[in-house]
Length: 333
Image (cartoon, rainbow, N blue to C red; front, side, top):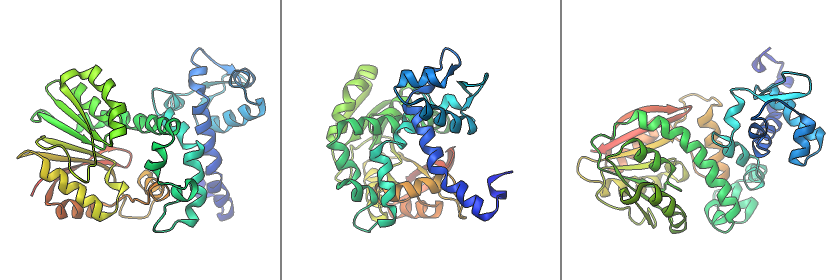
């Protein structure tokens, strides 16, 4: 029986149980169970002793995760990761899964019903906006960065296969965090030089690792991308930046990139795109998360086309990247 075929009350209870499923998976990632099971199946009791949690808690987490297909039970009481479960590893999407259950990310969801126009739920829960709060809490910021990096690696592989950088000399990653996407693009295109542009404290943390890896091929600048972005590049990357802002600010950012790019340049926008109909897909879930964290929003294709046009650009093409994620390539109008 599929969830959709359940009677209404049972279906509602199934949906409400989503909080438990999400937290069980997040906890499995935080406990690094995939890594702890790398040498073969182990019992819940052995894992609980190693983690330092009650055996009953470990058994409950593993039971739910196994029911979701993340672990197998080759012998009664023993567990091992499935192929699906390996996505919870530290080198895959584990950091993002673990981050979802962290208090700084989880608590604001309880304030969704209190959302106001002047304060998203994150600010109601923590007293400050997301980026301001992260700047004051380095450990939480590191968890946030690791989560974003994990998903970025997933999207970077898709981007390097979806866009031909052969005619590009320099690429600027606007709001690119620690430079995970830019690093993937540079690694896949040896002729390219790149520039990472983000807030000064973000840029300062990203500079040394990128320069150590790419040397003179990479620069890292700090600043306010609403004030100006570094000029003269052939391609400007905006990965999951527009959904943080309202329409006016999004147009302002696109217009700045359009003014900065070299003749014949491109603006490469990576965003989730809402479906025309109402469905609870990845894009709809991200749209809800943007309401919780920033008061931002995920848009539909016509809305993105309008933003691009209002910025003096024209959509060259839309290319699907990952589940719900698209590449929008824009050129001068």
